[in-house]
Every structure is written in C-alpha cells, then in structure tokens.
Amino acid sequence: MSEPKVMTVLGPVAPDALGAVLMHEHILCDLTPLARRGSGEPAVEITLENAFDVNYRPGEFFGNHRLADEALAAREVTLFAQQGGGTIVEMTTAGIAPDLEGLARISRATGVHVIASAGYYTEPYLDPETLSLPVEALTEVIVEELSVGARGTAVRCGIIGEIGCSWPLTPFENRSLQAGARAQRQTGAAITVHPGRHPQAPHDILTILDKAGADISRVIIDHMDRTYEDDGEIVALARRGCVVEFDFFGIETSKYWMGVADLPTDWMRLRCIRRLFDAGLADRVVVSHDICTRSRLQTLGGHGYGHLLRNVAPLMIERGFTQGEIDRLLIETPRRLLARPL
Ligand SMILES: [Zn+2]
Image 1 (cartoon, rainbow, N blue to C red):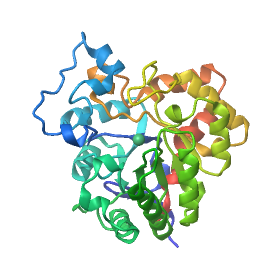
Image 2 (image 1 turned 90 degrees about the vertical axis):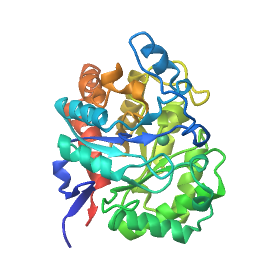
Image 3 (image 1 turned 180 degrees about the vertical axis):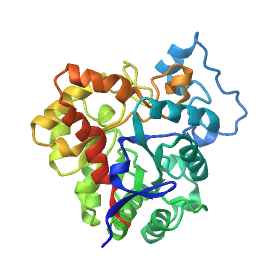
Image 4 (image 1 turned 180 degrees about the horizontal axis):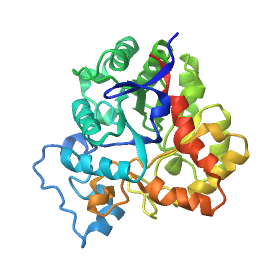
C-alpha cells in the first residue's frame, strides 16, 4: 500500500512537508446570517478609531464576518509563512461560502499548504433542499468532495468538517454527523466537529459518531474555549479518545459575542493544555485561532494567522513547555490527523 499522504487544495503532499499547522481557520468565508446577506448594508470600514470595538463586539458590525477579499487573504497567508507557518486547514464547509478555487489560487501564490473541508455547517446556514437530504446522499457528497472534487471544482478536500452542530442538535445535523462517520470509513479522513454551545453537546456528538462507526481517535472536537469553563471537563472529554481543539487563540476578551461564556486567555488555554499533557493525553490536543472576521486580520489591526508562532510559542517556552511539546502540538499531531492512504 502506498505511503499515507495529505490532500491539499493543490494535490497530495508528504506529511513531513506540512511544517507548522493551524488546524482550524477560515481564509475565504461568509458567516453573515442568511437573512442579512445581500441586504445592501455597507460593510464596516475598520479604522484605528473603531478597531478595538469591532474586535470586542465583532458580530455587531456588518461585513466583519465576510472574508472575500482574495488579495487581502493572500497577504495575510504570506505573513503567516514569513512568521514560520507551513499549513492552514481551512474549515469553510457548505453554508458559509466555501471558495475552493480561491483557496487553490492563494496556496499557489503564497506557497502555504491549504487543506479544504468537506461537509456541512450548522442548519441555519443551509437551504431547504440540502436540509432534506438523507444520510446516504450526504455521505455520497462528502466522499466525492474528498476523492473527486468539491462543489463543482476539481479541488479535493482533506478533512471532514467542521461539521456544524447546534444545541439542541437538529435532525439534519444528526444525519450530517452520521454521514461524516460513513465517509470517514470509506476514506480514512479525520472528522472535525463544531459542537453546540453546551457541555453535553460534545458527548452526544461522540456517541452518534461512535454508533455510526467512526474512528474516534481521528475525531476532533472544536471550540473547547467556549464550551467548558472547567478544565476537568476537557480532560474527561479527551479521555473518551477524541482530540480536543483550542481554537480561539488570540481572543482575550470578556465578551463572548455568540452567547454567554467565560472565555479563557491564551495563558489559561495553555494551562489546560499543560494539564492534558501531564495526564498523558499529549497526542489528543490541537490548536488554532479560528479566524473568521476581518478584525482579526493582521493588516486590519488583529493578531493574524501567525499569532500562535509569533507570540504563543515563546510564551509556552517562558512557561516551561519544551520545544518537543510545542512541535507535538503544531506539527506532529496535525500530521497524524491529516495523513491518510491516498
Ligand atoms: Zn466553528
């Protein structure tokens, strides 16, 4: 059998070519609610004067959730490369405006590997026709996105998800999870899940995936940062065998714009990661920023895709992590998750 490879938007690459990997970002996407898209409202212009407020209350400024400027995106990805980055896993699934050919152009222009996502975001972003599809049809689409080409292009995806889940989970989202599990059985791809905003949501999701035959060691549960306030609950979740993801690095604010949550600072994230490492779960943690707003781009005053490498890695050394542990988090675990027989 051939060596495991990683499917990028420009084709398969060897796992050791990835370098430092961000496991959960958006480069081109639109998280504007469907009802407001195309409303003709002017998009906010981010200035030095309003940059803090747009970052603090990102959902209140129309257009902030739309990443559609390809030249700006390429500039941001270039900054990531200059700061030591190698690969970005781009999580834009159906419903939030995936642009596969745009990603391929950006990857070609910047030299950064980009991995695209198969599957479906949460129900409120999807059209009635999609929402009526049975598990079999959803599975077929996901397998095709991974093995033939996605969304009418020849660009193949390299991971399943982020599969969008609400709380409570909707019947469509339940089918979307089952389809993800079935597609994983056929392709070997990892699954990554955006859980509903409730501490029970990740557990219910793992149970559905497990019953549908998924390999839980290749399932990533995203957004630990806003799902649990107690680190012990994150350790308990990882003990179920899945990978837990801290993907709000760079967000250090008291106001959670999507609900009520005590968001951690970067250091509090690291403290929980330390605890996971000390509990023998070092191979079940990944990290990212989940950039999905303009206000978090470096060009517009934000932390950009390079924050983990530029700021967090030195903070980790300062706080006693070894370089080997940093490499585990940014290089080795992503490599294991992304590589599959191709
Ligand atoms: Zn998400």
